[in-house]
Length: 101
Image (cartoon, rainbow, N blue to C red; front, side, top):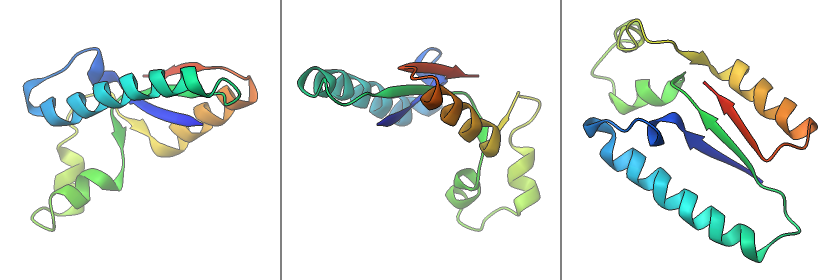
């Protein structure tokens, strides 16, 4: 099982309060479930800021694709294919945790 964690859990910001809170709650739940299902391996993939269509969809057509891309600013942004590749490598290596930042 792959659980997608977030780097926002390490450095929460006020405008991420709902997102980060739900990630913390789901981490708590995953940890409890893991105690009950030791026969299932869980990979926790902690992911940094990733460029995806999610942010574009969040603007519900009020911004163009390029305007949404500009919202990433100068922050280091990961690409989805890179993140997916790191997750597959972690699974191949039988890891239980990987930071993709």
